Length: 256
Image (cartoon, rainbow, N blue to C red):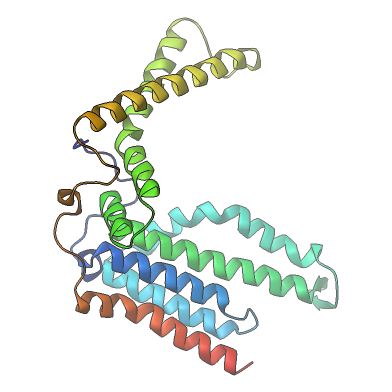
C-alpha cells in the first residue's frame, strides 16, 4: 500500500496554491463550479470575470496556459455540440454572416461552452496543484463517505499494477501471433479483457483479506492523514475565489 503511483496531472511547483490544505481546494473548486453553473447565461460579462479568476489562480499556482489548453481538450465533444446547437435549435432566428441561427441555440451553445470550459479549467487547476493522495485525504477530512474514499484509494494504489498486467498479457498474446488490429481477433481480445478482470478481482480479494487480518476496520489509519487539517487562514484564502465568484453572480442576477 505504500508503493508509489503515477501522477498524470499533478505539477510539482512551490506556490501558495500548492501549499494549501487539500480540503480547502476541493471545497473552493466545488463552490466555484456551483456558482458558475447558477449564473444566468445572458450575463456574458460575468463569465469573463470568472475567467479572470481562473487566470489569477493559474498564475499564482504557476500552471502554464499551454498545459491547461492541452488538457482541456477533453471537452471537445461538448464544444462540438455547443457549436452545432445554433443550427439544431428552433425558435426565433437571427442572421449572422448570412446564416440564420437560432437565438435560443446561440444562448444554449454559449451556456454549455462557457460553463463546461470553466468547470474543466477549475478541475485541472485542482489536479495540477494537488496530488492524488492529497485529494483522498482532503475528501476524508470533508467527511466524504468512507466507501468512496476506500474505492478511490485502492484504485489509485493498484491501477499501475493492472496496467502492467495488461501490458504483459498483450505482449504474450502478440508473441503467439495474435494481432488485435484485425476484426476476426476481437474474440481473443475480449477473452483477454475477461481474464484481466478475473485476475483483478482475485487480487482484490487477497488484498482485502490481508488487510482485514491486520486490523483494517474500514477507514484509513490516522497516519494516512499526515498532519492536521487546514488552518483558518488557509480556509479564508481558498474561500476568496468562490466568494468573489458569488459576488459576481449576485450582481449578474440582480442586473437581469
